[in-house]
Image 1 (cartoon, rainbow, N blue to C red):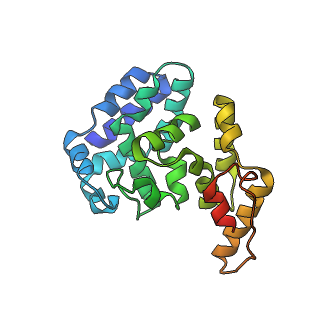
Image 2 (image 1 turned 60 degrees about the vertical axis):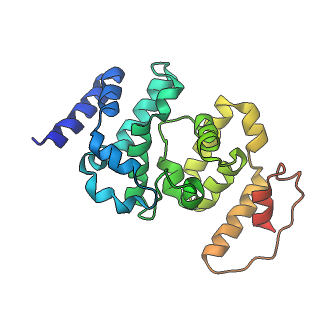
Length: 226
């Protein structure tokens, strides 16, 4: 068994055993040289991904790691600040990059804007964090407006709303006042979906002007529908 295989087996064992302390100890002590190489990347992750075999291997099982960490958070085993450590960010965005080759590093000044059109970014970056913490952190760390998150998720995958609906339910359960402010009304949601799909198909729909009140003064939505 290689060292990498042993590392993955250890992570999976911690998840199976419910050993959150050991899991975080492993994640926080991932290969320093590879982490340094990743943090130096300011453009496409594909520029450095070939030099990160250990991090890539761990990122390959991020879909197993993320739900466990979210459960541990919900059970008050970890604090919110632990959800945003650099090592978790790294393996989550590497997982995104495995689905989206043009994914930009989070050191890029336009990190969220450049990645926001791709569904894999919204599905997997910080997938271990609750919806409200994810939304708040994107604004606090990257300057991405909170009000833009739900419409961007919706438009990134208008054909399948399962993740969008799950994200909305999570936000509504944890922060009902936020959801009241940011939630997209069904008629507006459906109009956005129709236009997004039409654009994909090369069709042109007539403009759909809306009152700002109807879109909760969200100018991203209003501009998209006009």
